[in-house]
Each structure stands twice: as structure tokens, then as C-alpha cells.
Image 1: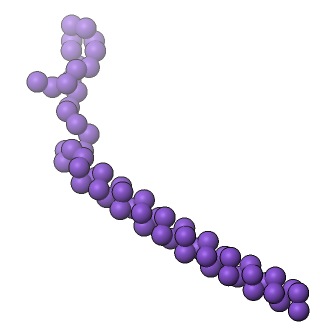
Image 2 (image 1 turned 90 degrees about the horizontal axis):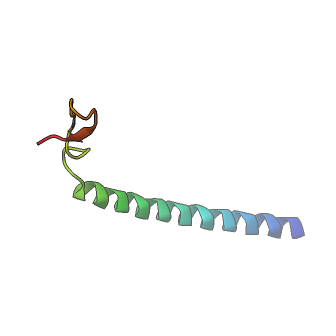
Image 3 (image 1 turned 90 degrees about the vertical axis):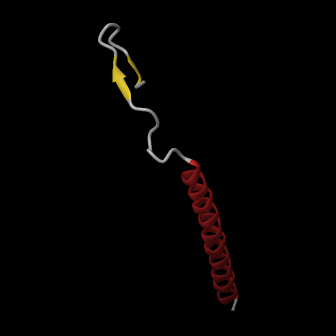
Length: 61
């Protein structure tokens, strides 16, 4: 009987953990979606070009 109670407790605990993880994953997904919506639509920002005089990259004008 003790084993049955232990297994039931583990099942309930596992179910609770799975629900919490799913909820947290949904929150993170929503946060990432909001950040992506605010991001630059071109994706990576300004294009960089090589300056032949200095050999360094700078934003394209």
C-alpha cells in the first residue's frame, strides 16, 4: 500500500512539473515573439563594408 501511495505521489508531482514547464515554455515563446517583432526587419542591422585604407569594417553609408 505504501508503494502505491508513493507511485501516486510521483505521478501527481510529475504531472505538476510537466504543466509548469509547458507554461514556462509558453511564456518564453511569447517573450521571444515580442522581441522578434521589435527587431530590425532586415535581420542583422546595417551592412558592413571593408574600408580599403584601414582594412577595418564600417557600416555602409
